[in-house]
Length: 333
Image (cartoon, helix red, strand yellow):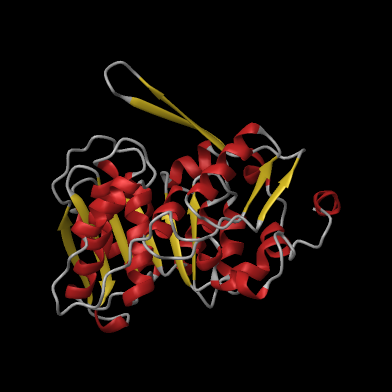
């Protein structure tokens, strides 16, 4: 959800597709999304549903631990994505999803429905945790999700599990092997300490795969909460603007942009963009003059109507595409 707010701040018209409860957490989330002008027309709200909530505990020393309650998104019935969200998914230019608290079958269904779009996948937890601890699905489904994505962000540790490699392999080797194993056009492996390792196909083909390493820009590191979401939003904004990189310079340009967004996030307490981060981004987003233009940073003064998602323009009214009865769906599946 946080990355949608960052995408919106970077000039993309963003919206959230989710099931939420008619509870205080759902109200709080919707209020926050409205504050950041993220479209909520396709949220499905029902009293019997439970809203996904992440609770973060911070110790006196500054260490933190987050516990995620998946809510109703963790119990999505089969074909729920198609029944409720096919319309917006089939009209969006870019679609992002994550492996964290949604059943892997629903993640795969989302990617299938958005086959015409640029598909972004954030592997936000270790694969072993997703499959064994969280029980989101099996390894085969997880691997199919990776193979269907256009851009994948993951940690080096998560990628290492997927290629079943020893710790002696370099981060670049891991990124290269992950891209080759699943045929992913663009892979970005993040490391909080060092930066990001990229793997991509030179010329856009399957041959001549290349890797690159981009260090994080200097920052205070005031708050790392939301760093990966901010970086992910930078990938989305850059690909939306420039396309999927197919050479070293375009890959580095994309990662540099995403790193700057991440830096603006971690330099501010709180994982959401603010007027202060917008000002900072305006100063930071200065790339060489030969480069295509960078994303336009939006301020909250702009109207929501002016920033409606492309797919929403053809649909009248909130949730108008959700014509099926939710109770009937849950009984059927």
